[in-house]
Length: 293
Image (tube, rainbow, N blue to C red; front, top):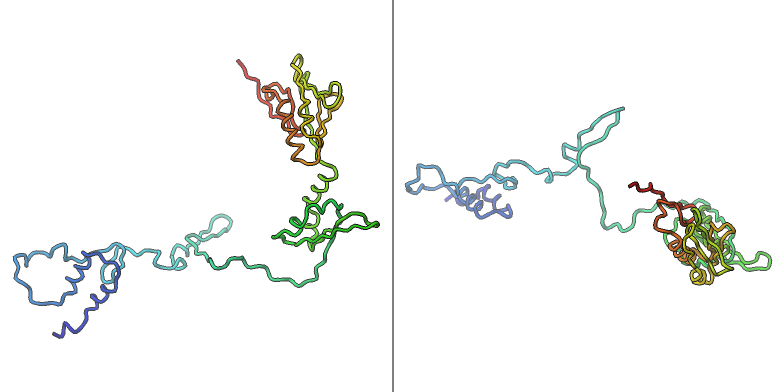
């Protein structure tokens, strides 16, 4: 028949639509069936069954069927009406509302670098004692420097033992790390333990290394000689008044380890309330109010 040779456009569109349910596909076959003689049926005059009614899909992805709403994600973010809104508040300040698209390139491993400026650069040098060469190439030639640093170790009768550190940026030459390393190797590291309170005193009896500490009037005297002999390179001294104990050693790690051990012995439990005991210089303990009965 001529009706069978002409394809139905609605049936062709439904065949191209992916992932239709079995119920929707049966309804599409019923709708796309060519017209023919009606079969005699008892229910011919009644309404069609619910299985043959056209389905109303929520997503609205099947052409030819009415849709409830269209998803905003099907369109570009730039075309959304919410991005066109512009709000003006106090003092004429404006900003835009809505979602904004962003650009990303997952294949770009490194961020784009600033263009090379072929201006004449000047290499500035600064002199340091030769002991600063102990930092080695791990520090001076490390990766990730904004201004690469170079250094030269010089030994001569005229200049003596020294190194010259140079860089195109003057701030890279004046590094705090180099100064701290030189001070640690030449001067060492020292810390002070301050004793406060009535009757709190530290003294040597009769001399080093017999260190004695008394934490109050009538308190039992503690013998701390073992702490003075624990590290032979760390020197422990105290003033005549007995309220300051000074520890001096080669580096911060060794001095700090012994200082914390001495502080733990010199600090009583009621220090926050009575104020008696020891603390590091410039780091006083936080006082608390006396408990009332």
